[in-house]
Image 1 (cartoon, helix red, strand yellow):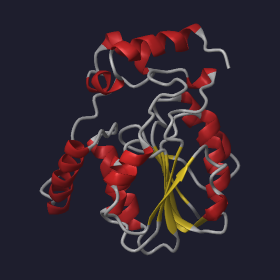
Image 2 (tube, rainbow, N blue to C red):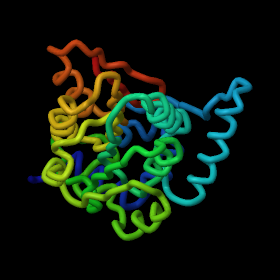
Image 3 (tube, rainbow, N blue to C red):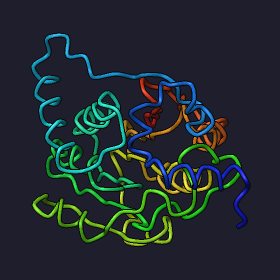
Length: 247
């Protein structure tokens, strides 16, 4: 695939100013061409006197000190609560788009005995179409060391890694049912394939949660197109996520 001029510009800019720094400065207007639609400053998680939220904030701060986590505090809390509230739903948990393992660590903190299946190329984004061409997406972006992520999560129980392009790596879980699935795959084609695979395998009451619904048109289109003729509504959450509860 030939990169468009916009993708070349994104690649050049990101090579000079890594995304983790621009992510912290996304509210400034001059990053608009590189950060797509995301100009909102989402801030920190408000605890409103909740001891559970305070404890989560402390744990999240620890995770951020251990590894790079490119999601907001409130988005991390959505993952935490989706995993917690589906404890009574039968099925395993899956995450597609592991990056450096921060969100997987959040899942492990509250998943109980459920098995967690982690899918990632560990070589970055495999494909970026024109609809996905917003900062900082390009082929190879968000690569992470497979060995380092495995080592980071080595003390977590009932966790299995699958290295490669999803759903090519889905064979071992084709007969599984799922209570919660977390998607962070950034692009239209990858999101579409994930939904096609997991939707029929979700238990009733199970949650599909995705990052980047409000910030990347490819992810939004994949969800909106897939659920257009289905009973489940796509709920846009605070931050950039969306979630669907299987009925």
